[in-house]
Amino acid sequence: MPSVSWGIESQGTTSAIRTVGVVTVATNRYLDYWREMAATADEHLFPGHEVVMHVFTDRVDEALAMAGGFSRIRVNAIEVEALGWPDATLLRYSLIDRHAEHLQQDLLVHLDADMQVVADVGPELDPAHWPGGIALVRHPGYWRPHWPQRSALYMKKPRMAARDAVSMVQHGSVGMWERHQASRAFVPRSRRRTYVCGGTWMGLREPFCAMVHELATRTDADTQDQIMAIWHDESHLNWYASHHRTAFLGTEYCYALGFPNLAGMQARIVAVDKGDDRTR
Image (tube, rainbow, N blue to C red; front, side):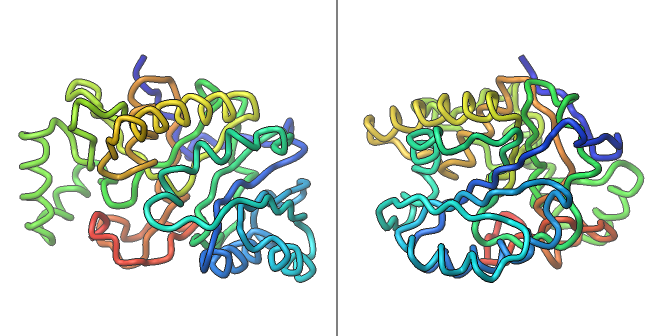
């Protein structure tokens, strides 16, 4: 079934949520990014709630030592092997699925290690109204304002307008959809609607773990067939979004600095710039 939009402008409540778990894969140097992200989460993420940071890392002792610098959040360091690129991103569903027994909080949030929580996140959300119990985030590189603001954006950025027009004609939607039909991340043209990011996603515990298990099974099957989706875990997440009912949160939850399509938007969670051309 197609996804259903549930924007952040629908102000809700997290009063039914008592505990929150944050899930992050942070091996090798990404644990240093994670420490900075966790410090911002300590200040802004679900204030007033019990928050546990589940970090999958090869640097367990260091992660636990870092926990002493936080005032509110707790840290659960889960030892995994050091992963390079692209395994660290491609295998995240399998890692999370393998250790799902650790994830016992009411609400689970996936955050990439290289994110920063720059404003309070939580009081404005209403997980009870998320279709399917899952909330995904519109990708910052492919979010576009409504008309007539979009016309003004295109006037200022004619190259963006041209790229969007070509993408709409050739692929049916903006976004880096998996178009290799042999991959389990393949999304048919008719289902390419809202392209989501892999950096931030969340859900109630049971739907979250069920989604992770389904995506782990599909990514593992692709790996066994020696197939790699174009944007790895994000491609598979977009397959999920196009075939299940979910909520869509605004790009405020995976904001990218300096991008003209996001001008005037108030960020809540910011992605650290690593030179990803998709967001240019």
